[in-house]
Length: 442
Image (cartoon, rainbow, N blue to C red; front, side):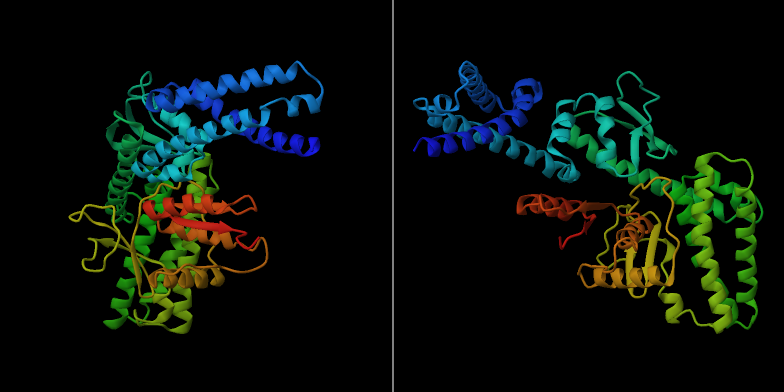
């Protein structure tokens, strides 16, 4: 009987201790939570006092049987356990409201989220957690208000790329509301910079050659600008072939070779790490574009409706097509980047990814892109299969970077419960990002 009593008491005790350790800094040390949840903070204070008294009492005795079998000991512990769980439920409901206001909070650990909320009126402190919310961003440029952090005029990526904004953002109000504004601001600023890059790209041959042009824009947008121009020029070549110019494609391959050659020469000079990474990324995608054009020359493809051309990720610059129910973060009257592959179409989402490089595109990558985008077109998911280390996750991430879309990667372990899955799916459904579940069949 005594052993059963000891076992029962200890199992409740360890549970109470674990919960108390987790919640004590939140309810006892966070002023924000104490002001938002006053009743539950008082309840937790009572439980805290009871638990401390019980621990003091237990520490005066070194005999386990006497400690565990003392009169009413298990009941007191159960009472504390219920009280703490009630407080935790109230806390989760409070966090749920904040997550609904700014859905990216679903992907942030509760402890980090509480830190963000309790420092809501101190943007400089919140900026330390931006990397958990926006994948490519490390912090904002607060140079116009270094003391308060109330004005942001640009952002800095995790790989030290600095991006200045055309308009400043004033940071005020509740943290979840100004983060929503910040997310919107990122997208608008990147779209404006892409428009400037696209317009300046028309003057590559006359004004500013491409290997110099790319220095004026962030890595991600100089790459998209390059891809838009490659798509437009290839279409133009198809038109020229149709109107009788037989060697147009061969000449365009020479143009591609020449451009890559210039970039390679530029990489061999003395450059900063940022510019070098940017040029390497553009060369990576350029080489693929050159190979496609070369394939057209060899197989004598002259028709822009040929599957070899349609199956490429093609970037266009124009107004959002109406009546196709496409998700766009750009105002309707402004041009944006439209992406097509086969019969699937989407709008570039302007999620900042930083200067992180891109994968070399192989025939297998191409097939993965077609399969995944076709699945999306049918509102299905995709599940690349293959041995470990062959690049399934990286290919999925690379496609999301190409589309400028947020992707959240989860390494699924046996600790994942249906509750954590529910949180993840609520976040994915509300942000519209992709979820990549690694090792899902563990």
